[in-house]
Image (cartoon, rainbow, N blue to C red; front, side, top):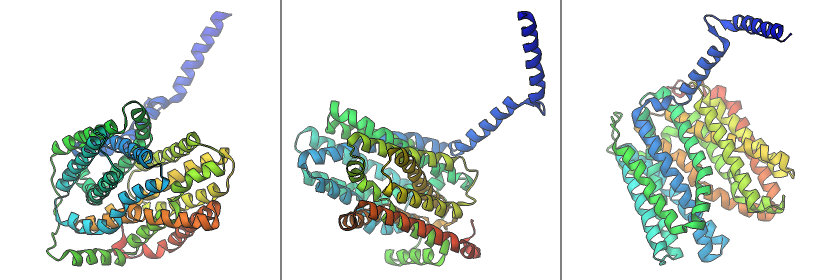
Amino acid sequence: MGGRFFLFSLCFLCTWRRVLRKEGGTVAEHQVQVLTQKWHRFGVAFSHRNYRLFFAGQAISVIGTWVQRTALSWLVYRLTNSVLMLGLLDFAGQIPFLFLAPVAGVLVDRWNRYRIVVAAQVLSMLQAGILAYLVLTDTVQVWHVLLLTVFIGLVNAFEIPSRQSFVIEMVEDKAHLSNAIALNSAMFNSARIIGPSVAGVAIATLGEGLCFFLNALSYIAVIAGLLMMKVNPIPRKISRQRVWNDLMEGLRYVNRIRTIRAVLLLMVVLSIAGMPVMVLLPVIVRNAFEGGPQLLGFFMSTFGLGALIGTFFLASRRNTAGLQRLIPMACGLFGCGLMVFSLSRSLWLTFPVALMMGLGMVVQTASTNTFLQSVVDEDKRGRVISLYVTSFGGLSPIGSYLTGNAADVFGVSATLFTGGLVCLTGALFFLSRLPAWSQQPQEAMR
């Protein structure tokens, strides 16, 4: 009986092997081939040596940055025991974007972007080193921290537009630009999950000072990667006008091309009406769910996981086609999620919604970056990207301030629901106007 069963099983397997054979290869082999192609498409930007060097160094540096951010907040709260000072710390780091980033964009279009990025990494390492020295020698005061935070905000106002504009020079092939930007977002969101976890252990065992020292050391990796590159700058027209005239030229350029203007305005909507949910998250955790720091951490990780899924989705896309429609859809997804999030009192519902919001947020922001980099003229790239940085980062302190005041007057749930409704309305208006905007020849994807 056992022998018959063995023979029957062998015949069955042989028959199915013949059935599964498909055009000279088995289905399994075909699936492996498909997965290999998808994996290659997911990391196509890594085919460029300069981008590989940048990514490897930046991945280490960004983790160090998140370690420092976490340790810095803990240090300020330990020194002052004041929530207000934590808000002031965030304000001090973000407000330079609002005032300086547009001007920095003009200079980015004039200067060598590669050199700006290198110089910014050196200055950032210096800032972390000074912080480490002040804490390790026990001479640190709150005004030291605030001053150094403003300093790094000024550096970032130049570094971020320069780095974002420099991506096209690293990958060289514009068809791989979308993948490179998505991989950058994946790296950032992964570091946002890893960095605070490392910081929690490091603060408890080593103290804040050594956290800042570790961040200073992490910049060596990205600086080394940048110095190993062989960069061929893209030729572009260098303006000899006054900075103010160039700035106004960039604003007129954005205003003239309606799709560029629209995606930037939609970023403003997300920044002011949607993203302040992160500021109110501790209040929601405590009042709506009667939770504590552990639950807050779960929510933050869920947002980060959703963002990470969004970056993987973008990295697997073949090209930039369809981004004009994907951007408002992502904003609408975030808006719908925020409305449900504001009303939910069930953790089983709120966690999937938080995942959806993280996904929608990163798909909108990364897709907007990719779209702008794909259509903008090379000699105006820095100015347009600086406006993107301003709309995304520079306006967040204003959004947090407005949302905080509205929450005091109308309540947290009503404020967040209204913010989600504003995001959804903006997305629907964008989608309704998209066919008319896309008819303009100058707005076609270059």
